[in-house]
Length: 67
Picture (cartoon, helix red, strand yellow):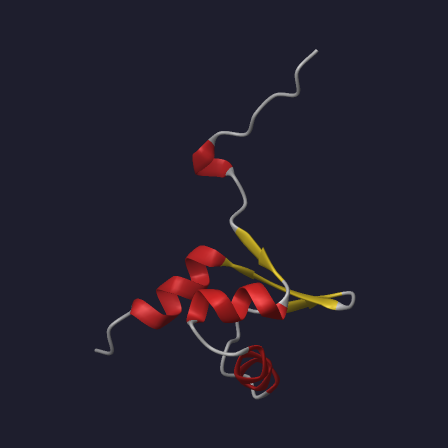
């Protein structure tokens, strides 16, 4: 039996690890780590020994306009 596929609208868009987070925000791993540690990326959470963020929230954070 094939596993049931999750609807794309409900699929998790998680980015795992500083290296992949850095790629999405076009920064080096060191810059991304510093931004996370400094609290500049509040949507990034630590899960065990790794960091994780929602791609949608990360992109929205950098594309929102200031009122």
